Length: 513
Image (tube, rainbow, N blue to C red; front, side, top):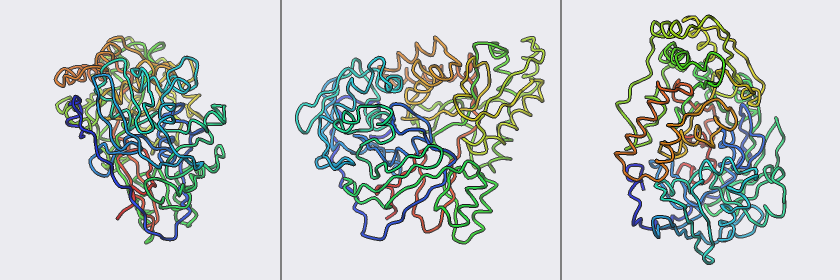
């Protein structure tokens, strides 16, 4: 199933199983990856950040797998086949002989429990908010027998197959979850089916995973993975050059020549399906006036940023959308404009008289984050906006209330549709609403409700274009900057293949032939 025909849902043909890749017997490395930060815990129902996705991709599996190396196709994962029984019902056949990290065998009961009321959608549970972002339309999940699980939706869902392949769909052990009996403890030692299991979590220091040699997809290529926290980009480069680590994240373009200057080192990666943006807290202060938000957008010379800070390695997107949308991509949507004269005019019309606007960043979370922030501050000040740059220690400080500020953020596409990107981030259960508390728009909410069940492609495209207009001009929650880069420095003997995703895949399916 490709992105171009994902709306052709009725009469879907079950997919056949794919034989697991078996790695050749060889000496395996204890791989050390230097990262700018690690997630505080590892439960997908409680965290949705890029740094979490980076680590959890090695711990969990989903029923359907996205084959990122072959056109982002949907292929069998923990399920060998699936079919639509009626407009609301899907039957999924699970793979036999799949072992959890504790050695127990996965059953249909584990799958049903993963999506059941003890974990998802129930009011008051820690996983409620995030599970509702992705599965609010799910009614119930039932283990029909020892091979088949039935999913019943409350409404028609044109994206259901994509949901089973993405965030919050990671399958867990029912027995292990109930045995631990504590969400916080579980989040530090989850029991799942991925190629690596959790061995150690040291907050602020490192997360260590070890190979799960009963993995259904074949032997994991590495004996262990250690995600070691090194906040400073220069420190990561030095550690790579000294041989202390095998791989580093968040390489900036100005570091490429230094890394490649070592004959045994290389730089890999590129833009991912993520857009770097800034967000606006519109519920108070100067940003309450939409004209000031529009002026901020017009004052940004995005091309200058991508050229000077990223050596033209990334592009400026046509609004909050991705080319990976396929038929849903609005290719003629206008590029974000750079017009400082118009920006000054809007500020004058709004009666802006120099009131300070706080701009909150973390500094080391995104690639070249501080450099980008300083460039934006200069551009905004050039049109007369009084920007107070504040470097925060953590995201709690970034989202501190009242949030009448500008703050750094990104938008990710979980699956190729507005409902798998903007709705997840900016909808009623998205982080913009329940964490940042910075923006909402009634028309966007109404469009989202319609898109949840709509299968007519032309009408979906029309509503998607309207969303882009809301985000770009009518009531902007922020603005796009550029496609997020994800560059890695590595030893040349490390066979790591980057994907157009924030995840780092160290499993056997991403091992070069």
